[in-house]
Length: 421
Image 1 (cartoon, rainbow, N blue to C red):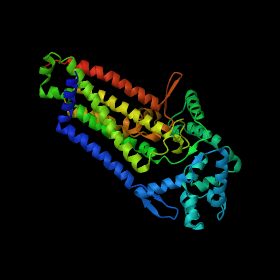
Image 2 (cartoon, rainbow, N blue to C red):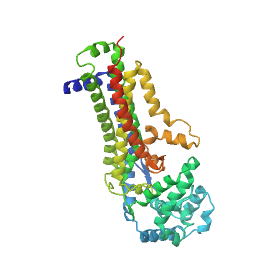
Image 3 (cartoon, rainbow, N blue to C red):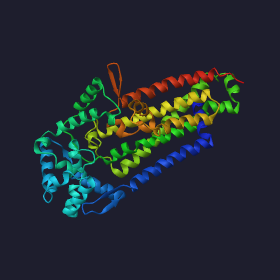
Image 4 (tube, rainbow, N blue to C red):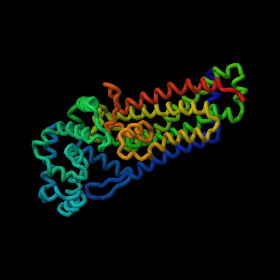
């Protein structure tokens, strides 16, 4: 059996199209991650625009300056100090009614470069985010908060979730009482006080994990001929009439295919994780995922959120492998199989939604949308069946595990029962 699996595995990689697709997508991922590093930009405290590794180092230094536990007392002190600086030369009332561009110009004229860089520090935007209205700069938000509001920092974070539930995904969805209770309980389980610090490498992995949709295409290319190729080459008659053609050989094809899908996905994931952690740094793995955004209602560390996302991606890769095997066992046209897979991976991200909440919930189940940290952790996507409420991550894991479990046996049965022409 092992010899058959090894033979089928080698057979998968022997085709020129398989080699080109597999190598080409890995090279593409390497290029994307290299550009991701090179195109990183930030401003130093002196106003100098930095790029590449210099920008990463500067951003790390800026965040390290504020690392620590965000107790309510610390948040109060730091926002008070920020307000004192931001409104030492400008009256708070002057920026409240302005557009963000006009307020930015006003503050830029009133303060020197070093002061303005501190006022625009993303850390303060992060602290003030629970009170931020759309289109506001942090100093505009600071102009509208007082000491009593700041004292309830974690209450404001909880209220932000309730406002998001009221908003209903931009008006596209109305959350049921059970869904509201689910998300409220989830946010309430987040450990407080939160810690703040640098987790640039892990954040970059989560920002780039969507590129793991590309390996699904390579998996499709490599696995499409597993059964369909036998039909086209008219070798199915020989295989199915051999002693183990309907048993061990079919099993070997399936095992080799799933091994390839898993191995190739892991290799692609290592490219993304490796480049991100090498250049952006591996520190911050134990920081809460809320260092990315305070509106995330998950009690996870950055490393846990990363591995959860990568694990869902692995289930997707295996689920798609099972689907490709089923199509390959049913269809003779390899082009048709490839077209179906590409449509499921990419075209689902191009369908106009038009504020339709039901359509949103459907499209979020496909890779191009699901492999997105913002959607996965911040968008509050949930599915309800009776009293049971499950979030997007749970539904994705269950769905692709089910696809894998259903498609693999169906593919084996379809090939075994294939009537030789």
